[in-house]
Amino acid sequence: MEHLRMTKEELILLTEKIVSGTATDAELMQYNRVFNAFSRQETWDEHTLGNKAEIEAAIRLRLEDALRKPAATPVIGWYKWAAAAAVVVIISVSAILLRPREVRLAPQAERFRNDIPAPSGNHAVLTLGNGQQILLDSAGNGTIAVQGGVNIAKTADGQIAYSGAGATVSTNTITLPPGSRALKIVLADGTKVWIDAGSSFTYPTTFTGKTRAVNITGQAYFEVAQNSNMPFTVSTTNKSYSVDVLGTSFNIRVYADESNIKLTLVDGAVKFNTNTVSKLMKPGEQATASDNGTIQLTTNADLTAATAWKDGLFYYNGSDINTIMSELQRYYNLDVVYQANVRDSFVAKIPRDVPISQLLNLLEMTNLVHFRIEGRKVTVMK
Image (cartoon, rainbow, N blue to C red; front, side, top):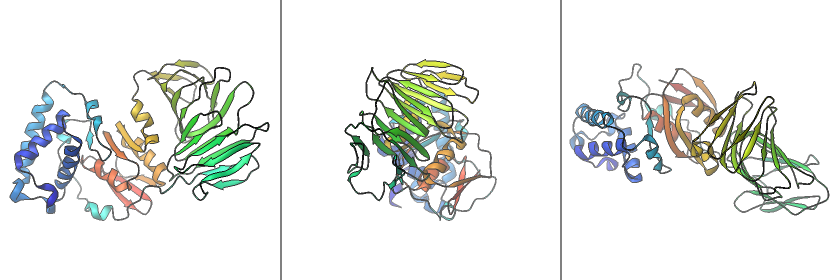
């Protein structure tokens, strides 16, 4: 058992480092492997590590002592985790260790037999102003269309870039179905837009007049090019809300199956407008708008949690299982069935290019939730 060549004391000290937030990225990855072995009796090296129950008891004592001390390093200090990363759960110490299961589960290898890989492409469809549709995954690099003097090109890294100016303005729409990787678009004015799975973005090939107006449903991250003479406006397809921008960076989340809209401002200034109120936002703030048009403003928002998706990461900072599974449902194009009500909150960080089993395995390490994969259906269990 090559990955568990540790003494009992090394294992206990490693656990203390995890709790205190002083573990290196390599130690965090090692801890993931060791912790996972607690749930697989056949891989536990009793000759090297000793009796499992005794080790669990020793770790429990160390953890209880560490968690009783004033927190010198808050939970947020753990976010140096590498992309392979670890997972913790924001609950009492008793849940950090494995708990006896009330119902005996099938082995993970059996429950995860039908793994679901990460999306192989963005599967985006570009609809031109004349109705022509282009499947971007199968389009070659270079120019893919020319509209009114504006060149539309696919770059070597897969992004879509508009360049040039023309007298004729055409409206384009890019749609990413569920089961898609994010797509980056560079608009004719230099504005950069990242589109997430299950989203649709409508925009002109070139901007004329006094405003730059675009439309989004789903999730998108904007880096808007500065132009004080032509303000940038983002409207939402399924809600009568809009965002007024001069030059700034922000994330907007407006999925049709979610009751709230979330706007997170990274840099610059925006005005968030609903049908009843407008709010001028500052960097670091997150606005949540409900269906009745009210806006709740949060200062010191977790910007990393709001924007990690565009950088290819799943990143959860105290998220509930429903929030996590909702994102996985769109990204992996799967159905989710709940057999248990999981009320705990989770913190996790892992790249988006892994099969779903790797993320579910991290969550299972808490022993607070378990999963079964059948075809494209994931069942959530206790």
